[in-house]
Image (cartoon, rainbow, N blue to C red):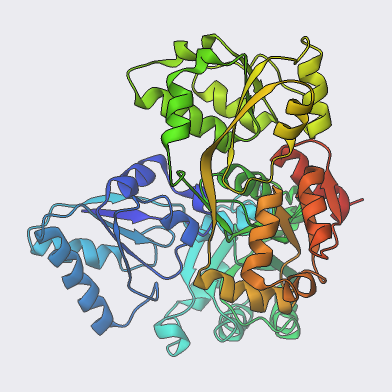
Length: 502
């Protein structure tokens, strides 16, 4: 049994030890404030149980305690995933005590508490030399705001240092009013950090005597971290997170789930919120025979042209599935179209012989022709089952003998996630939609309809990798705002940055 601190929001703030424990779990019992992307890091086979609020009522907490014991006694490796740190203003201590009383062995994995992380992401160091000698954490709400916190406000107000307090808009007037009434100076700097460490983070600053009015003026409805003390004045100099080039932007990633992580990570590094809604699922071909026969005799070809990372993975996987190893690919020249394709080959320790700078058919054809006449050359072209490649026809026209085989299928994914996205696109709550291939464009149109798709995207920025995806969008009546020349997700993110911050 693991009791794991999930951290304050951003999935990558979980500790290495916490991540390892999560990945080993067969059952994951989590609070509703834990980010879905963090749950994706658990084993796909793990049972996931949402137990709701991070601050449950006592009856609900009893049910959680018994659930933990039940799953542990069934012999499962259980991860109890808790927002923030399990022992900081949380019920982790009571859960651990109950496990102890029931004879269940457990391990506590500390997490980053929001009381420290949220101010840090707002550019506010929770302590600083010369800014007081004390740091006080206050739980500013109990029972979802129905009971005021029981604090010795007179003693707290006299402390020379920083106060960090969990509080929501309902409790904020009481907390601030109590500090002011007991001598905290109204001109002292204060900040309320909302959605800390996430791309939706918002930081409101004002003198302590004016912070309540500012929060009410902004219509805040969610809890946050209140920070008071001289350290708040350093935000103007130290803010870093909300200065990122795509901070606050919500970007839809339509790429298949197994290929999306790199793009999602780059967007997060630039401050954007990546909304994953894959429109495609990559699957093996219905008939693997042609690919298997080609993979069994790669040296019967002069060229193998791989136009996607999926094609590269399918071919290499088929080669390794037999009694052969990668030395079987030493005969033909390998042409990898695009850096993602080359990177996939290199992941297996295979270096391509040719990487065309121009990823369009004409550029591929020209790069191959520069290596000698194509007349009579035997070319293997593993491809998608969509059959939209025209490269084979151009190679045949030059006299090559082309064998096209289906290496993979790109099937359209329709899920409840797309129903939720429909409303967000309609309400213009998504800033950008990314398409990394023509196939993703066609799948998006298939999901949302040929008439509705252009209207849904009319109020958002559409960004594509390369001209093929842009052409597919144009044919569907979708306006493209960003089209990258480079066929990489890094180029795609750079294009979005230039569009939003010219």
